[in-house]
Image 1 (tube, rainbow, N blue to C red):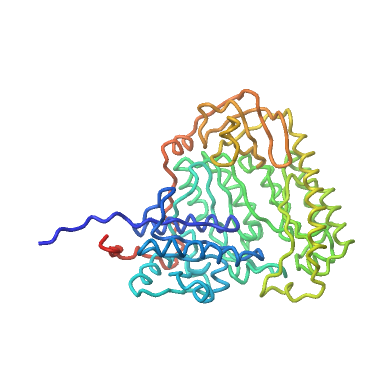
Image 2: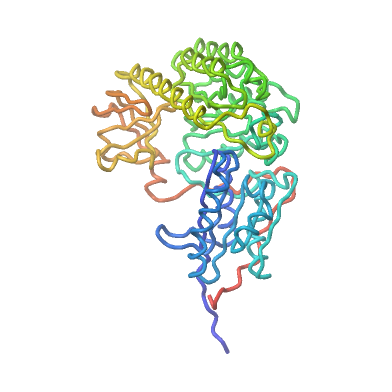
Length: 491
């Protein structure tokens, strides 16, 4: 009679590229794999399954993916039974092209069928051939799926997926689909589940987060959701990203200003300061409306830190158009900006527009923009010196912390602060300190701590535990746990 072999679980690693939505999707992928019997691969060890969760927004996204797949090929050759899966926006776009260019890939899945990953891995292994499955519409709202959270103290909560806008430079609506909203009760149940496990901060996510409610025709739904989320006992900070200026309404400003837990932080994408360029981008607002929103936010919350996105070199952008962008940057006084050189994305209307600019022109404008924004950011941060800030201590935010003896954390307005006197402080704890110095991208607080509050989130981080959420039912079909994995190579 044979003896049973007690095989260790197969291991996985998820690599994430792109936006916060992708980061949150990766938490879902990790949760799905663990529910299917996989275990996270220890640091420094090769995983049995590597999942690349891709982004398609930038021009070099394709090159980055195939470069990474090329590096993985010899690893897979040396690791019998290893599987490679590619998901996310680039998988939705390129589909079978990925397996054609990288035939050592085992699974390709899209943005609409994240929940299929464990079954596709099993099928690829059983059939000994690649499985490519791209759904054209959302099969299961991602938040119905289990998640293994990356942080003990801060969590992402998706309130919608997809986007109904038609910005001419953006491929996301074609890959993520039309906007689908979760019901408020489902969002609040997920937030409550995180808070019950010690999480102190949540960020509400949507491709166009303040359009929330469009599916059930409630224009005030997002402001109401902010207030309701902020009222959950034990939740100390609420953030959201990213809103769209076209749908940004005064009731959202009132909810931010009137709900203590909602942080006075706003990421408001500008893209361009030129009305002509905004029209060609199909952004649905003009410079005057955008600056009016900034003015109203500052009137209600003088301490608000506002950040933005700007694209330089959109087709047809003239020097006068670009000067308008610089002027908005001067007036808006952004705390920070994500600045991008326009990159042509096949499948977008802008890719076929006349007036594509030479690379050297785009680069020169980009350098002028970033120099101006650095100057503004430094001035705005220097205005913080001497102020008392409350920080949620974080892990991995400061690359030089070990050398400087500091820790890092986020102020309520989202600014990154490197602080001293951190002995005994754990990621997830809350401290108060005084800002002593400033740089364009961070603040420094080198004095003694004014206070240090140990938290359940700090306890969880110290213990190495992370929140898990089983998913909140939406009345959609569920994704079952696949059968146990058959042994590979005997185990």
